[in-house]
Each structure stands twice: as structure tokens, then as C-alpha cells.
Image (cartoon, rainbow, N blue to C red):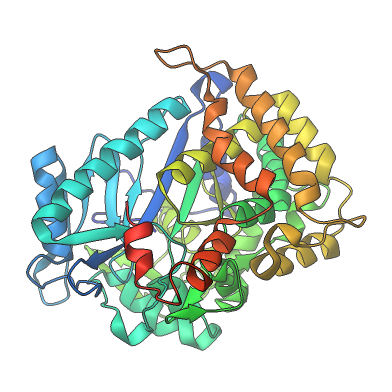
Length: 462
């Protein structure tokens, strides 16, 4: 989730609804300028008793953030209503290290040219947090969901927008608090060259997002026991907030483009408005009313472009459009999976031949078939049913072959002459065995761990 600390100087008031498509249109880039932005979250735990550290406790989240200064990171502060400040993120050459609501640590990486750079960035980040963890006695867990924590056992980070969201979530769904407090994900942000290019990438990304969910499924435990799912993180989104989640059927309609996505976002209820360094609660209110100066939270005021950009960050569909496309379907996982997720989507979406081939795989699927697949994957993983009979596993190898060809065509090599295709190997292994990471964890739980889920802290920490 994004971090705002100030209002920009060049922040025009929106006077026309036509302005709302500008952030998306301004995201268009020639292919030579396309970049890869990878985000990954991890759970933080105290090594001696596995509790989730609070913000303020000695060796807790604040201390962890500030310890990153030794690696050149600089603190990002947010004002509090009481007039103080809290460090809520760290900014540096590798992007931003920020906090999710219960202290999950996220790297929002820099926009990079190739996957070799992406995986090197990941390696630097993990080395840094592990070094800091040695000092603070904390470890870092690569999973899609806390395997053993109740909501009540988790701390709340002092970020203004999170307080508003935590208050609003129970009004609109039964699992929004779980999404905020108990999940971690890997995401990748990708560019497009035109409105038509955006639309095709959006469609392929949405249709194949359930495959990414299956390949990365890594959240089979809740509060110490198997939960009956392979990706409980993905299941949580099914009842978080229907107004801002889902598979967005309108993306597949003829004529889909920026303006149609604007219409969708205008129907997504607001969370907040950011003014003078503070978040003002506007949960459930209408951005359309804001455009007309009739927002109850700020009567008479009209929104700025920054307000609109903030609002764009408060929808959580399986693929999200801002000034780039975000692929949002994967559970958190180990280092190799952090590198594999961008490899999958770069391979499918950044080469035209591969993009066309991926579209050919899914273009015949109906709205109902796409939704059935999305609904089935959290529980069934690679065995989820696909259109025309068969199961997701039946097309997984074909899709990985397409991604491989797309990466090979990019021909981005490292100093040893290796191209980017090797980053797909963990996914090829998953498909070859027909078993998701969650199924591997369940086999250990029922086998060598003897039902002792505390073993997961040793096996799945970075």
C-alpha cells in the first residue's frame, strides 16, 4: 500500500471529469522505456517466541526501520493528530521499505530494466533486513498468511490511512481485517505503450491471474491448523469489500479503455482525503460528490490530482490500473518466488508475440468461466476447472512456455550471458510436480513436522 507524506506543489484542482484519465494516459511509454517494479511483503517475528513485534517495543518495527539507516535508507515521517510524527517508511536507491497494517515489511522496488536487476535488488534487501534482524532478534517469514496468529495477537501500525481502513472494513465484508493484518503478497508493476496495449495486457493479466494464484499458493494454515485452502490469502479477497475487488468483467467488453476504468473508480467508495499531512476520514463517501464540491468530509472543496491518485490506490482488484498495471494475485513466498513472479508477467506481457499467444489461450473464456476459475483456485490450486473441461494444470506448462519465449525474445542477459528465462524454474518445478507450495507445506505438517506448525518459522524464514 502506498505512502503519502506531503501534498505536491504542482497539484491542480480537477475541473473536468476528462482530467481523471490523465494519470493513465501519462503512464504510456515507448517499449524501450518499459520498466519492472516488484513489491514483496514479509512477516516480521521475534525469534525467541515468534510473536509479531509492535511498533514501539524495544527491537520492534520502529527500531527495525531505523536500523536500515546504516545501509543508506532515509526515514519517511507522517504527522500524527496529536502533533508528533512517526517513521512509517524508509526511502533509498532500491525504492521504499514500508509497513503494512500489522507490521508486515514491504519493499516497493525501484523501476528496473531487467529481471537480473530485480533479483539483485531483492537479494540486497533481504541481506539488509536479515543483518538488521540479527541486531533486533527478529526474523522474516515468506508466506501468504500468518500461519498461527489471531487478529487479536497482531499489532497495529501508526499510519493514518490504516486507522480509517480498519474502521471501515467490518462494514463491508467479513475478512477485510484479515486482508490487512494477516496477509502478505508479491506483486509486479508493469508499463504499457498505449490505451490498446494497456487493455490487452489488462485482459490477459486478469484472465491468467488465477494461474499465478495457484503457482504461488502458500497460505494453507490459519491459527495453527490447516484451513482447507491452498491460498487462504486469495480466499480472503472474496469477502473483503466487493465494491473494490474482483475480476472486473467490464475490462473484457468492447471499447474498454481509460475512461471506462475511470467510471469504475468513481463508483468505488472513498477511504480518505489527505490534507496538511493528515488523513481525513471519508470512508464510504463518493468521489463523484467530491468532484461537485459536496463531499461531507470536506464541504465545498474540490479534489486535486493527488486526491485522485490516492483514490486510485484504494481499489484492490486482481489487476489494478494506475499509471501502470499491477499484477496482484500471488501469495508471499521465498526469494526464488519473488524473482519468479515478475518473470512470469514480464515474459507474458512485454513481448508482443508472447502477449498475442497468451491472449489466444484465454480469449474464448466467458465471464462465468473466468469467475468460476477465480473462485475455485484458492481451494483447488492447479486442479481448478478451466473452460472447455480439464484443469488449470493442463494449460500451466503452455503458459510457462509462452512466458519463456517472451523472456528469450527480450534477450536481456547478465554478465555470465544468461538470459531471464532461468527465473521461471521454480514455477516449472511446481508444474512438473503438479503440487503448489501450499501442498508441500501441508505434506510437511502432516509428515515430518508431526503437526508442529512452529517448524514453519525455521523452514520458511528468509
